[in-house]
Length: 226
Image 1 (cartoon, one colour):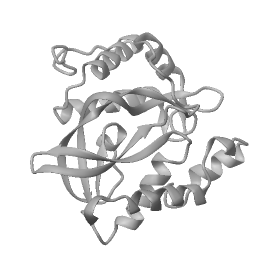
Image 2: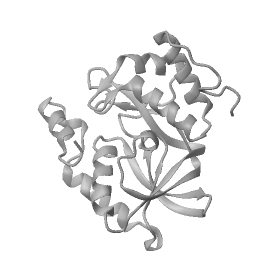
Image 3: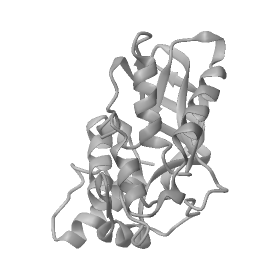
């Protein structure tokens, strides 16, 4: 889908092209980000949401990673991937403050152009994120990685939503990549599997499963993390 840019075409055919940036704008953003690469270092990507459980990247190395100054949360209306213009869903974004544990992926020098174009079509199609280079702590030391931070001036920025509203929205919305509820559960499960602690994501997952009529216990989603 991303190779062929079919999501863009589907949104255009639905009459909602105004919620996307053009391919020229997308390429301009990618090129600008590459020009800002620190010291011509290898290219790493910091993933904090769906990039953890579905990176869709050909990478040569993966490391547990943490950044300071940003935290993960459902701050982004999704009108393409996990929702529609009529029934927006929610996806994760980084917002200012705190810290965030995730994964860092190192791209091969030979395939970086193709992989970054696919990544940009995935993350930057809507008018939502600002790509940034962030100092990223890994077991091998500090690296610089690209990540995607919510643009607070964007119409996609939700501000802070209460947890009951997040779950209610997640249960109703679906988009080109699937349902918002599956996105939330897949994220919680991947965090658990990677031993990444996120109390709020785990609470949201437990509540969503409870509303679906499924059981979830402390073994699945820990309750004692900070």
